[in-house]
Image (cartoon, rainbow, N blue to C red; front, side, top):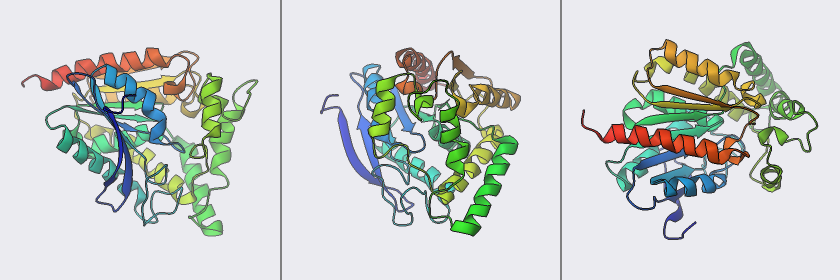
Length: 315
């Protein structure tokens, strides 16, 4: 990654958070900007290869560490939580602060809001509350189909709040999520094989102290609020907004892609007319760290080319 194209700095959000931001410029004439939102229990630094790929395809990209993750700091939050109060709202406001940074740095360029897993939940919520700020939305490997099990999870979190408080890691939610997903993989080499078939990527995740940790009770409560809000407010999205949905058919976090297909149905039922969905065979949760990542990234860039060309054309 060329030093002249890549930069790291901090950006102050209106929420008071100091956001760790990584930016990569496009090689040559830029087509647009991809604003990246990472998943739970990881950080934006893991998206450097994706940013480098996007640069080669003519896209600036920006990724920030979400509150409670990586190098982002906020005085109103302990590590592994969004905020002591109002965390669900503040993570969306932080995305808007990064968008302001993009708009000031790259005025006039169309912005695609991209998110993986939890980041996809955040990206969808952002698109629903700020639909006029983006040219396209990409939601990858996200489960917004929590249903009855989600309500059970919320009940468990309410009980944990009473018994142990909200500012320490949840005891039960890791068992119902990361640990359960790990056990679903036959002949697994590690407890994180559910992330990818690429052993080197799994090992790198395990070795990274900023990955794989247990979220506080309060963060889980905010995540469920965002999951339900994202699913319930799909009708707020512009009907012609281009959307790119992607999932893996061997991803236990999305019920092997069924949750991705369910989101597609929900969007089309809301009258959306430009929804692209891809379900990748044999693919686990972290597509950008999977064996077929080049295929997935190329498909995304091809879609983004169409979106940005349309966004630049006069109405």
